[in-house]
Length: 136
Image (cartoon, rainbow, N blue to C red; front, side):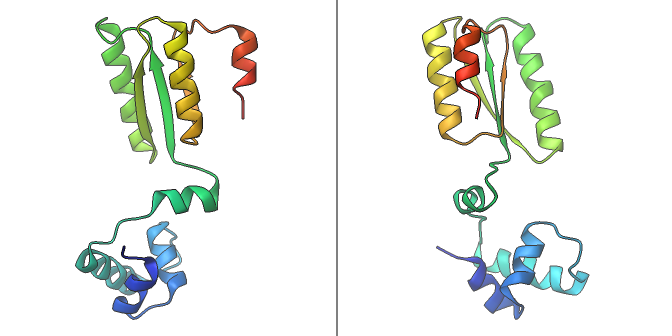
């Protein structure tokens, strides 16, 4: 697996510079940004999101649990949430619970295990007590 250290070596810059470029830190000169991005492309570097999540305790992802994807309202809602999430650098996990509380609980637990930064529950069937217990 290609690491930021590999990118730094090929680009001829420090590891910190690569980190700043990958995290969109404005403190890097345009010349070094170009070097890093060219090296990353050359090496086919991909950001290790698992490592980033561990370091920052954020996943840049949110979960959306809807009751019924076949209802024409929900795909439009999901599209709007996805667009706003994407504009803000987040990935959206979309789950359909078929109006079943057990399925909703399973999705909720799975999304929390994936360390999502937030959950959007539409017309939830879970009790207030259960909802309070899933807070991080």
